[in-house]
Length: 108
Image (cartoon, rainbow, N blue to C red; front, top):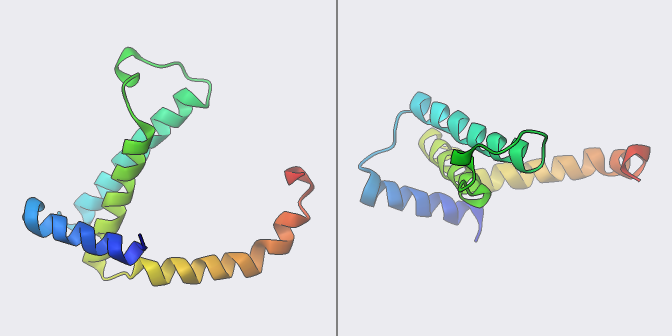
């Protein structure tokens, strides 16, 4: 599914289930909270922190999906076409970073 279709899907969900979008500041706080939950999982699963009993049932895929949902909400309510923006950024990164990454000895 393309990003633009995800934006439409989220917008339809908001209209049918969410009543309205939270304001931008609330959604920014929500995004920060969701990213923090992803960080908590990563630090325990791949890092050096140990799991708390309450952390053992938390699902990385679900938390990443929560981040994506709030990000799509923010894009919708601020008029950002994420598909176009992502495609443009990917082109910039491909042109700017191709040689840099292929010649980086740290990545061998």
